[in-house]
Length: 111
Image (cartoon, rainbow, N blue to C red; front, top):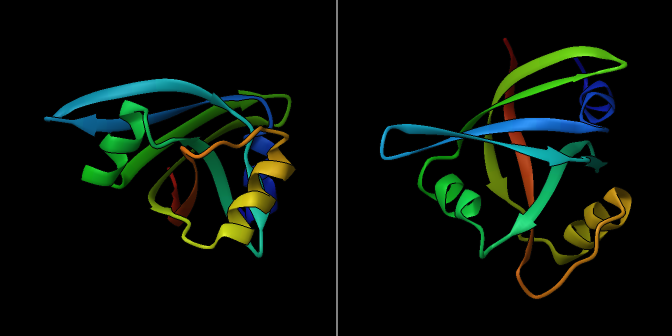
C-alpha cells in the first residue's frame, strides 16, 4: 500500500487508537494529506490525543469507506517544518491556529 492509497483510505472518517497508562483510546478523525511523500493528519497541541502520542508514538488506524477497509500500525512524529505543516493543513482543508500541529505517519505496517 503506497501513501496515496493511504490518503484515499483516510479521506473520510477514520479511527486512530493511542494508549495512555496501558489503556487504549480510540477516536474518530477525518482527512489526511500527502506532502513530500509523507502522510499527515492534523490536531491541536491542547488535545489529550497529542499528549498520548508524545508519550507513546505507536498507533493503529482503521478506516472503512468506499475504498474498502484499511488497517495499519505506525509511529507518529510531529512535523517541525512550518511550510510542510501549512501545506498539510491546506491540503486537508482545515484551519490552523497557534496550537495546530501536523503529525506524520512513519514506519507504516499494514495489518
